[in-house]
Figure 1 (spheres, rainbow, N blue to C red):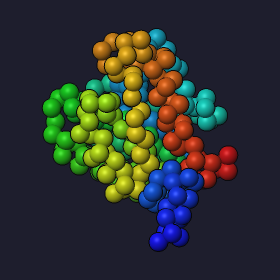
Figure 2 (cartoon, rainbow, N blue to C red):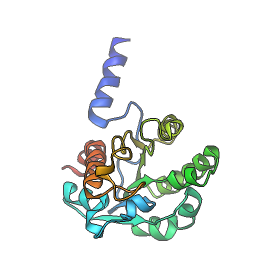
Figure 3 (cartoon, one colour):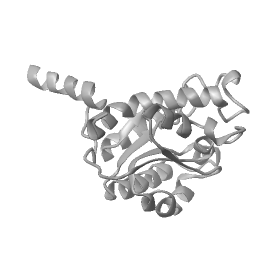
Length: 204
């Protein structure tokens, strides 16, 4: 029992998750952020202020911004081949589901679409990162289901990415979208979550 507990602690320490993450031996080339208007940088004066560009600075390498305003999990799946799979993905960071919520698409449908997206990405031997889109009580039902989906598929789960942002007007450009300061917080949280895997697979 004690050995099993120590093994679990070591997994959490080195890999950040208490379950196996798929495709840590990925030979892909590109890091891609695949999401909606938050990923694309809606409301910002420059695309360089969006979290994918800030994340690129933290990692010291290019990050492709494949965000599209208004995307639902369904519409994102339709452009997955063109905007992600055809670009030799190494790590794909998924930020999707907010528009599903706004359009009152059942959570069950959103999860099915997300799982299809994740499995397609993993078929290309890329690492998948699933972003928690909840914020406090807002979308709280999404948090546990996203975490369960990440565990089920062997994806990295990044909790609390938007914590303290959506309810702080000083970190937003409007009622929904983060400003440059908000995007920097998002990038920092994602970076901390993926850094152990990046180091493990790329020797950095």
